[in-house]
Image (cartoon, rainbow, N blue to C red; front, side):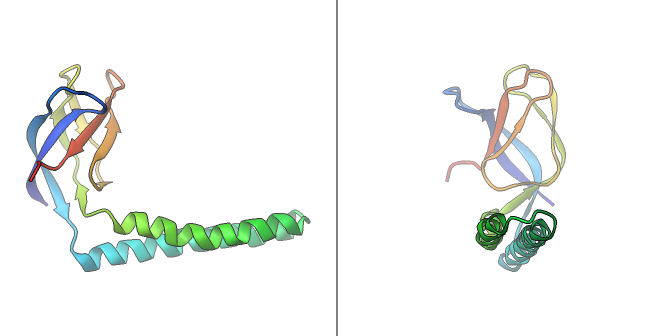
Length: 132
């Protein structure tokens, strides 16, 4: 984990964000591919298993015929969105841009912009990389 400069702001707000340093792990290309393949096989395999079990327990072949292509498409789609993530954020403490209370960034948030809710005022907090 290396300290990374980020901009913290409220989602859909015109106010400028606050610059802070939080620890982040910048994923190398092979790490991104490994994560994507793992997600793709996990989601696709689980969906195929559910699709086939549905055929055994619910004697309606049209459900199986509809869910099978969905399972085959869903795995690569989830893998692609996982591959797009270039950074993993570590758990850290920041200040909420609205209520100014201490806020914990959940561990494992991936990609830019990272979004999560404030536990105190329930706004959506966005974390962006600094503008180039």
